[in-house]
Image (cartoon, rainbow, N blue to C red; front, side, top):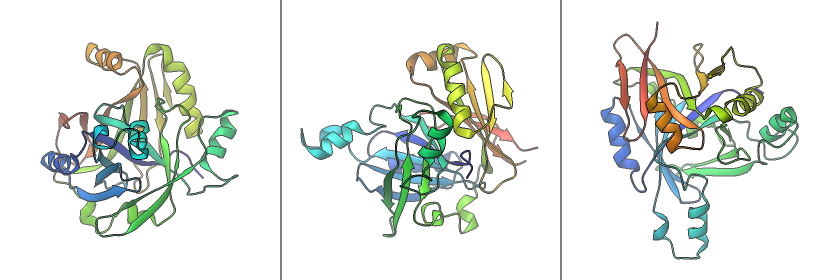
Length: 282
């Protein structure tokens, strides 16, 4: 199977703010639907489903760490969560996995075989209960380095349509006229650019179609569009971006671009904690 299909992009906000963030994204011109609480009870989300059937996961922890009893199992789980120390904003992105938990067909087997090493952990089960009571199950493949800018993989065990309700079509229509993901732009320090670029090529199983000493671009696959999203890895190009890298020593998502139609929004805007660029579809 391909290991380059964009599934979703994760946007984190402070604990307990899922509904508030949903309203903020509605004011930005997105249609937002309730997601539910994850199986571990630590996080909850809302979803923005796009016309290319990728989606934005608006996620927040349900409670701050201090809400759990000291030394309790729930406190340890909350404090050790892979996103526990991340600042709000675009924090992660996922490619579509295949749902296998056992070798030899797991995503981790496929990618680690290419890398001739361990880029990805063995798969673990995940899930979420929707507000209507529907229980969803999936399999997660995560990078070994939790500070990596590599994507994680989400492979459905239950039908993806339950996790990402693209029907009715109105779920993926937005007042801002967003049609799909145009690009995800990652920023990294110059010192790590070469090694990160190499690892991304292993994951997507292909060299970048554009490459300089400061920027590399890969074409990803879309689930429901012939227009392919682009993954961009870049070193800082201006002082603002240099500040972003200095404040985020871990490579991270600097901005996300969205295709918009002729009547769509223009320019650049900010979510509560991150940057969006509207890209006219021509």
